[in-house]
Every structure is written in structure tokens, then in C-alpha cells.
Length: 397
Image: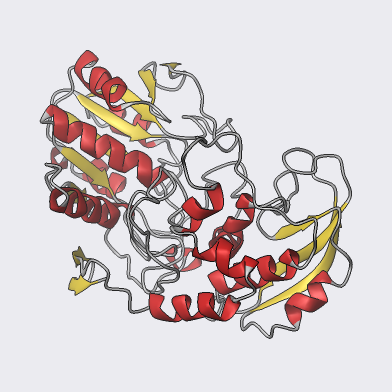
């Protein structure tokens, strides 16, 4: 339960429903869309008289029962009785038809992101923002905190040709932006690319400051997907997310996904090799585990468990680079393209995760120092020189 330190965008609307104008409103949301007191936003807004007529759900579904790369079917929501439109992997024409079918005059988004570029909720928001623009319908974001804070930036941008649903914007992997700010950035980049997307209306939070981590917000954590159980997972995911593009288990099917990782062919000295890298703010222990599903399900794996000892110094993507470089020394290591991604002439999945071929090719060549140089440049990345209306005045990201 929230302690009142922060008033979420949805809570501001509940205090003043006039902030949401419109007679027929569509709400892009799921189980993460809750008030500071953990009531579903959809139900709370309806009770306050906000005329929501349809719900639009992302990956994992409205209730969160679906695993990665999956969603729940469209239908009716048991909580509100409203029709549910499954947006995941739907075409532009499908979204356009849904907006027209429900005769919407406003589309509102209330989803909790985790702060990493390759998490898909903000991609859903952007596709819905574009659909609203095509329909001439205003788009509104009920803002929420970035669980990793808004001051640290980590990782490269995306090179042309490597855009995807896990990387629709050329922003750093740890981007430091809220959903409202991501919507503003998306609209500016779209408009710069000749796509007519007006700036969204953002119902900003009160009480949130950019340096806040999730613990600082006083808000309860709602796991935003089945394999994101804690805020610690979200922080670890910045570094270990790229393991999804390999034949290493990233810990799906364990109680600590993205913190435990390994494979049947790794040996007990793997954690020692990672500790020898001397990374600040993190340590590793040898871990044996048997995933109940996903990669290596039912097989005994050896690897490591990651422990963040100092979140302010956690080196994020450098952790992932060191893990991949150490695993690459085995002849059994391989880069993968998961079955839920499009194949054919698309780049390998790992290239979409990183935003270029660099992670894969430089690790294959044993040139991790070149990758570390890219990370050193990330903190001052000004690839687009995007200006934001931040929570602390006008600034640059």
C-alpha cells in the first residue's frame, strides 16, 4: 500500500475526474494499473464516473497469466464487465478497427514499466499512441515511477534497421524515463520521422523525484509480469536481460528469474570467474538449479546467483557483458532466436536486444573492451538530443 509520498497519475484523476475529458474512453492497462492503495485503476475510475467503455491489454494479458511472448485472448473483463482488446502483436489495422468499433474519443494508458528498453509495455503504449493519432483521438498517459529511478542511463541506442517491439525507440537500455516521458519522446521521434503523432497529455505524478528508486516511492510492488517478482529483479534485468538471446537459462522456471542463471554445461567455478572481474556493487555465488519450464526445463543447471550489494554502483550492462564473455568460452554456448520472435530476414534476437550486431560480434571476437567503451559513452548519449518536460523543469536526456 502506498504511504502517500507519491500521488500517481491515476490517483490525481480520482481526486479530480475532470482531468480526463471525454464521453467514451478506452483504457490501455492490465493488472499493473492500480491506485496507490492497490485497487485496479479500471474499477476505481469507473466508480469515480470516468466513462471507460473498453480495455486494451498488452503482453502477458489483462490479468497477467500469460508468459513471455504471449497474451490473453480478447473477451470481457470479469472485474468491470468491459470488453477487452488484446493489443499484443496486433496490426495497425486491428488497432484502428478496435478504436472505431468502440467509438472512442480518448485513449488513456495506465501501465507500469520497469525501466529497461527491452520490456514491452512502453512499446504497447507507443503503438496505441500512434493508433490514436491515426484516428484523431487524443492520447493521455497516467504516469508512474520508473522503478530504477530517473538519473542513471546505461547502454547504447539502436542503430537503423534494428528497431523492433523490444526496441522501438533509439534510447539507452536503462533509459531513466517514466511512461509519460517515453510517450513524449516517442511522439517527438515519430514526428521527426514524418509520422504525425501529437504530443500526449501526461497526468504527471506529484511527489516523485528523479533520484528515487522503487523503495523510495513508498509504493507496493505489483510484479509486472510472471518473471519480474521484485524490484531487485528489475534492476538485475538491465544486465541479465540479454541472456534471453542465448542458450543460457536466465532463470525462468525458478523463484529468482534474471538473478539466477546458468546451463547444464557450466561448471562450479563460473561464479568465481565473474567475481574475479571485480565489478562494483554486485557479487555472485555458485548456484545449482532445475528450471521447471523454459530453457533446460527439468535439467540440472550450474551457474550463479547475482546479488546487488550496492544499487547505486550496480554496473548493469557490464554485468551482462561479463556473463556472456565468460559463457562464450564454452564450445556449447550459442546465440538463439526464440520461437516467439519473427524470423526470416530479421536480425538475430540478441541483436534486437542490443540494438546492433556489436554485442554478439564483439563477444565472439573476444573484444569485450570495445563493448565497455560503448557503455562509457552511454551516460552522455545525445544521439537525438531530445528535450523533455521533466518533473524538475526542462532538461535534456
